[in-house]
Image 1 (cartoon, rainbow over the protein chains, first blue to last red):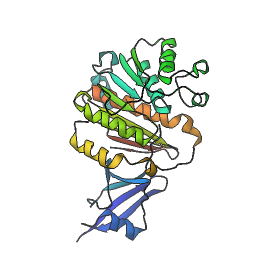
Image 2 (cartoon, rainbow over the protein chains, first blue to last red):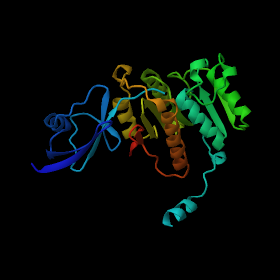
Image 3 (cartoon, rainbow over the protein chains, first blue to last red):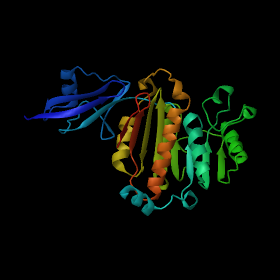
Image 4 (cartoon, rainbow over the protein chains, first blue to last red):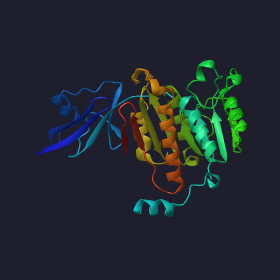
Length: 71
Length: 222
């Protein structure tokens, strides 16, 4: 497997650059990096919501957003 | 200079030539701001949907209401406000919540305050998807705003929205109240709605997911 990088933007916290092996899913990458996603947050890649089983491409920008739903 | 030329080539957006009715579902902080912006722009046919009665506490953060109208249905109070402002748009008042079997036609803009409400609206949108060219779901919480916009006939967005964006109210983040929550998040959401409608009118792809963290002035646009 090859080393790759992605950016994780956590709303309210900042941006982290993470290194990972290609083929790893977000759950594995987050776990190793100490990032936990609560059930009141969602993971988004290119505007689409994904699960922790998502395998990111290198250079991906991952955003962790709060689940808001007021109006 | 290049930017200036590009804008000029696109021409002015003329809402009076817009072919689709606009449906604004929910007339709270977001819906009332969207309604204000769209009738001021001159959209010719606007349907406003809300069953709630106007309360005193709504006056501070919801844009199109007057104290004298407290106790009236919000949809009726909003129309009265617009008429007093000289609005000439055809405004259809629906003193009702959108239900799963509500017949909707035209652009649908949702600004309701619960996820349960969004699920019902989505069911109505799905049943009428062939008559809805654009669906926009605006959400706020604390100083965070998210505006999701897509054509319901687009299967990729349909599936992602239904499976991933319609979480239950028990999975909604409890965010601390932020001082500018009084108006800024709703104003930002309405600005995104207007921008996407003008893009749609020019046959430009809408921005599907615009998120803003206003406390930090950070934005993501996809």
